[in-house]
Length: 424
Image: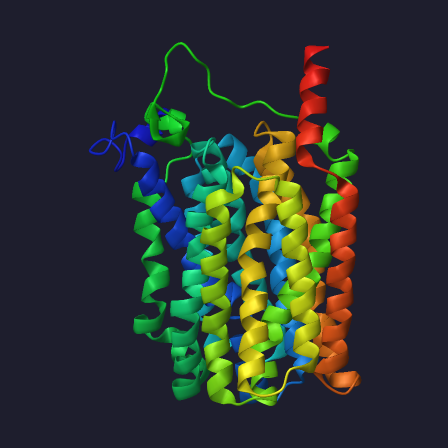
C-alpha cells in the first residue's frame, strides 16, 4: 500500500492528526449514505406510493431488496477491503450510488423500482458502515468507541440535513427532484473526499493508531481470532441473532415512520419526525459514546436494546403530534447506539485480524432482518388494519433481541479465552 502515500497524501504526510482527516471524510461518506438512502426509505415509500399508486407492501418490498442487496455486496467487498486500498471500493460504490439516485425518475414500474433499490443498495454498502467502521477500527484503538461515535454522527447529520431537503424537494417537484444538482450535489462531493483524504490504515501513512507517529520497533496490531473459528463461537451466533432481531424492528420503524406520523398526526409532523429521529440518534451517540470506552459494553448494549423495544410499543399506541414526536425521540436515541455497538462488540471479542470479513459476514445475516422489517410492517398495514398490530409485533421482536444478546455473554470473555488459547 505504498502508493497510499501519493495522490493527495504527501502534502499532509507526517501531520500527527491526519487521522482526523480520515474521520472527516468517513463521516461525510456516512452522511451521504444515510441522508439519501438509509433515512430516506420512508420518503421513497411515501413518494413512490403517491406517484404511481402502488400498494404500501409493494414499495416496502423495494426497501427489502435495497437492504438485501447491500448485505450481499458487503460479503463480496469484504475481501477486497482487506486486501486492497479501501478508497477504490468506496469510489466504485459512490459512482453506482450517484447514478441510481440520478436515474430514479426512470423507475416507473415495479421491476425498474426494484432495479433502483438494488443499485442503491450496492452503492450504499460500498460507502457506508462496513468500510467506514473498518477504517475507524484500524485508525483508533484507545478511543475507538468515541471516534466511531463521532464518525457515525454523519449518519444522523444526513438524516437531519439531507433527508428533510429531499422530502421537501419530492413534495414540490415530485420524483424528478433527484435530477436537480442542487439536491444531488452533496452526493457527488463525496468522490474527491474519498480519493484525496481516505487512507486504508495508519501504517500506509507511516503512522500508528490514534494519530501517533509509528514506532519502528513495534509491529502493527493486527491480531485476532480467525473467521472460521469466530463464527463457531456462542457469542457470534447469539450476537448475530440478536442483531438480526434488533434490525427487524429498527429498519421497519424507520421505513414507515414518515407514513405513521402522517396518519397519527399530520404532514408537518411527519416531516419533523425524520429530523427528530436523526437529532436524537446524533445526540445519544455522542453522549454515550464519550463514556463507552470505559464501560462494560455488554451491559450498555442490553440497555439500548431495551429502549428500542419500548419505543416500538410506544409507536403502536401514539396519537397526535406530541406523542408521535416523543416516541420518535426515544426511538432515535436507540438507532445510533445500536448501529455503533454491533461492530464494537465484534472488534472487542475477535480483534482486527479479519475484521472486514467478520463484520460483513455478520451484516449479511443481519440484512435478512433488515430486509424483513419494512416488509413485515408493510404487510401488517395492508392486511391487519393499520400500524398498531405491526408495531406490537416489532416491539415483541425487539424484546426477543434483548434476550438473545443476554445469552451471548460478554465479548471480553471471548477475547480472554482467545488470548489464553494463543498462549497455550
